[in-house]
Length: 624
Image 1 (tube, rainbow, N blue to C red):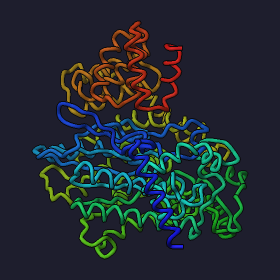
Image 2: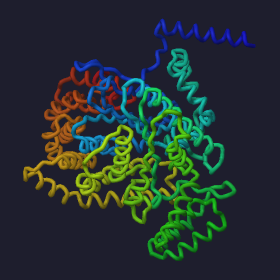
Image 3: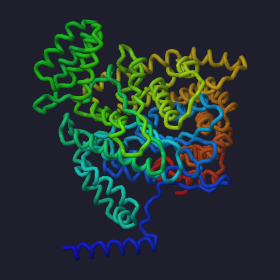
Image 4: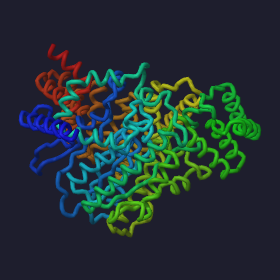
């Protein structure tokens, strides 16, 4: 037996060697490299990230994985600079915000304000739909490759239903060593070659019977119950992946900041309720009745009805949710919080990190729970969220739906990250403990950001697989209210901002505000209204790639491609790895009859993102 195993190993090693020599099956590298006068510039390779999205359903619905922000950075850390890597999932990446409002970007700005004598570079390497397996994988590559001074991790919401989540459809993902083994095999030519040859067969094997959006393909009909196999696997995988990451960081002398995940407890119902016997709870008429009682402020009746359901079957998550809402309205915030937390724990679709995952992060505050010699600091953002929230319970005042924080929520996460970074780097500042005058007093920015993001959430909900449920109706109503409230103030905001600009006083926070207002009009399909704000921001921030990218798009959409060309060309030079900017530049060249340049830009956009369907279709029309 041992001889046979040795023979197989020798055959595999020989095959790997031949493939390497012949350069067949070369796996995509983690970093994309671009040579510049400053030296090699790196960015995270989209082709590497795409390997995580191997599920057939993603390809069925043409899901385009949202890559990390394509920010380039020099491979070596420069003297006098503090480089920080931030790892996580969509809540960390900033969805549904533009880059400048994601908490890693806000943390970089806060650090610059608090430590003006130092230079900080915060690299946001989070990816939507991934979880702690990617945190470990990305963290290893970045720690070894870019010489960070610190690593920050904010993750936990995707441990059940994200890619490689324990409740995903493929059974092997419940076993952490198997998943980590597959990630190791990604570096081999042999595995990559087989993957490319048999990819269609692998897709057929993983294809679910029903079709639908990616979230449905991952999670539908797979309920998670406290203590079941998927629940235990998620907790174990999360703990092991974070431990391995801390160990990797310790070997390189890099400190780690861990932040437990926060979610919307107060205003978001559970996504799926299951009875104690394991059947779906489908009493929608009862839920409609409770909604009516809430609308009529008859909270005592609501409390009695929800208590009756919970006493009959304590496993029904939606009963605990409405009971919690009733207690809050009746002034009992303690019992209200307990019931809302029970609703989160019993939610059969675990898109919010449960208490067990939160406790995993908190446990690493104790030296005996983490790798020996590791420099780890745990910063808990939940007290700050509770302090700002109504009744001390986070809700729609800090979140857009279940897990994605709004602007103010991102500010709190950024501040928590700053506290941790300062702690592990041994930094002190004479600046105020919290820069309220910049981040909290610009309430208008929150309203605009809420408007932009609520529209993105509404578009997401159009394809949500649970659209017929009363819970999703509630979510839609909340998002619609947010959009309506923000839009009703938009004209006044515009007038006030233009008056401010006319006074000639341009402050840093004003520039962020103008760029955000312009982006909001652009997102709402009003490019002409966006242009004056984006011009104001561009005049003062010509080197911030997002600003000329949006301004050029606004000119293109308003019928002025000749003005768009030089602005988009500058944006593409500032961020040469952004395929959308290159596509917009190609369209502008096309409309100004610069055909060769149009083809060149569109081809480069396709090279950067082969899944950019619009670019492929446009190129086909240019070169039939």
